[in-house]
Image (cartoon, rainbow, N blue to C red; front, side, top):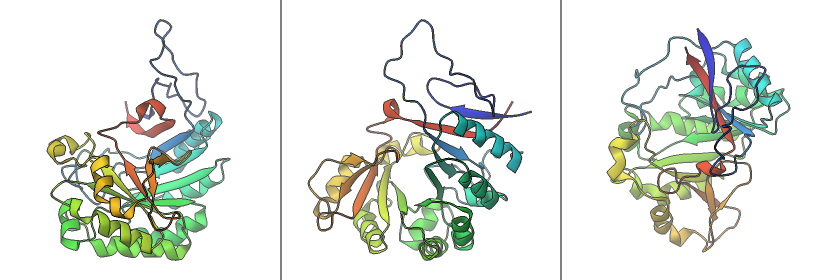
Length: 291
């Protein structure tokens, strides 16, 4: 039978929509102060139309047979908001593949939350940008690892760069202002493009963010090709102000540095391998599991 699975330290009971108190050890104090979750990442689907080299081995790898319907998602989200969640990010797989995506966004937008965002590879965003905006989506993050069409196709195992760029432009035209672009940096593949990606994003009022390869999915196979956040920043030093990188309050683990020539422009770095941020995490992850 289907069940909801949420990941957080310490573990939380998965009975929804009515949430029980977190289960805490009676004999061992936590090593650090536990942050009460205020944010949730909702994985609508495990399906994706790309198979990025650091993520999954192929496009048909390990899909679940069932998906939750709109009623079930609504019940889960009602329970999470009742438990204190105020920020929701919709993810996948690729969430734009979900048949009820727009209806789910519209339902979430009616809840008493502060922020509703979505992460997408943008291959279908040209079609969905306006409906998502009208449904109440606040923000978009787009995953794009290369501006070279051949390299992009290689890193995504068949993706078409033109589709993604068209999706980004459609989102800008639809009125999404606070857009971010996420690029996973792989040594010997796209690490020569950092400055080009930054300038391309800044020209479009998009905030570029560079991610280290993480040791999940196919990531362990690329361990020797990790480019650290400090190395990325060093390569971009001519473009960036000489200041400490800072997190954006209530917006996840990325640390930002402002542009040297314009303080309104920024570059973000997400260091999930060399400098993890688990201790201060306030994010819950929710998806549909099977039992």
